Image (cartoon, rainbow, N blue to C red):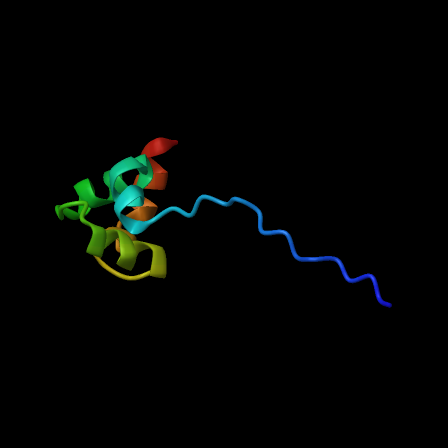
Length: 65
């Protein structure tokens, strides 16, 4: 008889693009500089490294300094 441990799933709350668009201040500042709305679609692009807001992320970092 083998004593295999059962995998225990941890309760991890995943951040959806909708929540990310609403709550992330860095993303919202980048959208402001890019002059685009902070939508779910734009959040998805930002998290994948694409889109207008993603292109303005360096300006946001410089402004925060």
